[in-house]
Amino acid sequence: MPDLLWDDVADWFDPEETGPLPDLRVPGASTADWQAVLDLVRDSGLRYCYEEGDAVLPLPRAAAVLSRPAGAECPNLSVWLAPDIVAIFRFYADEEIDFDVDLRELQGQERLDVLCGFLRSIGRRLDKPVLMDPEGGHGHPMLGYDPATDRVLFLADSD
Image (cartoon, rainbow, N blue to C red; front, top):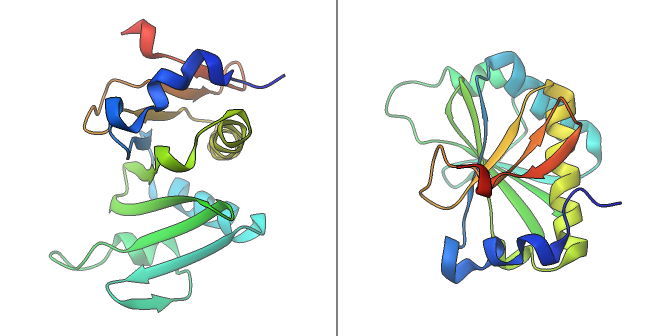
């Protein structure tokens, strides 16, 4: 049984209504949590690409990325959850793991299941919630992984 049913959340995945790039986050994170996510990506067999500016580089340790000098360009880590579904991690701060997905790539039950599986993998590895806010709606999650239930839950009605 899937965590979420497409028919129950489809309106929240309309790029025209909620914005095409929802914000995903793990609040209350640490450098060790970032490293655990990098290890998960490296060990998962998923295709990924780490970039600093225009340079494609090997995936570094989280401590090295998060201790970059003030004013340095923020690196990106693109992770392909499927051939045409990508999550882009941004290393803004060590206390919150931040990434984006494109709702245009997440239409239908099969693609929703891929996203839920990825959120579950991160949440299980960290034993922390992984939340998805509408674009620009930080702090108002529409769905998220709940470690207590080990499921991705629809949260939008709870606000």
